[in-house]
Length: 168
Image 1 (cartoon, rainbow, N blue to C red):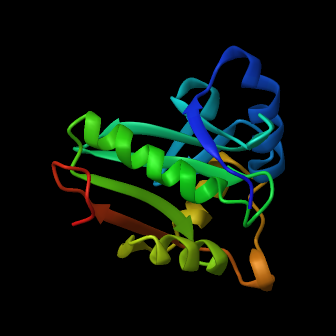
Image 2 (cartoon, rainbow, N blue to C red; image 1 turned 180 degrees about the vertical axis):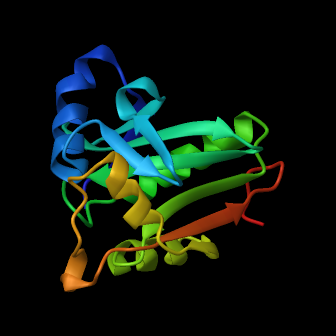
């Protein structure tokens, strides 16, 4: 695994981040918890490998006392970028005085559920039919997700943070 460093996105990262968002979400827009976000308008962290190559990105927003991870993706699964990005997001949250790191994923995304839970996030809510509602805003959302699991619901995961940034 390459050494991964994380930093705020810079103007020169635009093309790599845009390509990653096209691959993951079909473009710069995501619909989550009944809200449409333009990923280009939110703060972004980028992960770079030891050679300086683009390895992933995390888009976030601070709201409601927490840091919401709106999007996180690595160029190559298992390269360490996702873990490094979540750690960096936690530092951003702590510096901003946020008491939790949270995100939403979908009911089909078993790989992500495993990844997040192994990093201390817990399922704290389920919104049945949230993805069905999101299709009214973004019709390109598929009906079948990973492993041909019908895609209907959102799962909210979070990890409480202490003032020192340690996991609570």
